[in-house]
Image: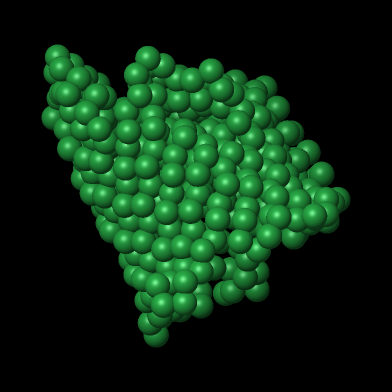
Length: 368
């Protein structure tokens, strides 16, 4: 185990060294074509009460080309290649310590035969003077890119890593499936509606829908975003006793983020989901604070702390989960950042044995 932990520390150090020796750049190929490359490494160590300690890591390569033939049209593709699963396949906890896609997730995506290709879509911008601005997106979409964003808790690669603090839409709706997204903005108000076709066990398809209404406020503290989201699916999901597949996904989420002056920001998410057979949690409440590095002369650095409570579905033995996370992210240049991460999770069961975990981690990103 110590050898594995040492290996991942070496990998993280090598990635940081590569990034520090490079300058931030993007591949500009002319005619509106560009590409972003992301090299990422994760190393995690888990201590589990009553069980063996575990160590794991992951290496990630993101390649995201984009073509803008005009100011109104965008073609976008995102591919991810990954080796390793960090602690996601080793932890006995209900929540994953890394809320993104690793080796097991990028192969056979959402019970399909497609691997590594996460997104491929076309977007059209339509500007109407009085009605506002519209964006229409169609193709293979990551619903979390468009729905349930948050300024401080939405990206496991640069913010909080635990899936509880990443994105509700990722856990409710299928990812990287054919979909249509409509976005509207006018003044302080905006709305988004999405329809996605998901796969169930690679044998049946169910349609999913999501709607988000957001108000952007400019207060004495700073900018804030207040969102109300609703999710609904077609029938096809099992009931709590797995006897009939005639249930719908139905969820309601309140999602807020607010600047607290020039030195900090806070977020809060609260969600409720109707009972269904394969859902793990019925309700959740998460909140956190992020401090900017202005106080110590490094404005791009971030320190975050968050906590959450999740209530299990009545039909499951898992009654509740409590989770907390702390991270400190340093920018080591224009293209490289390094994060220290610490997580605590506690799963309480009605009949089974409770699980408590401490997970420490290092995360490095080099994005060009």
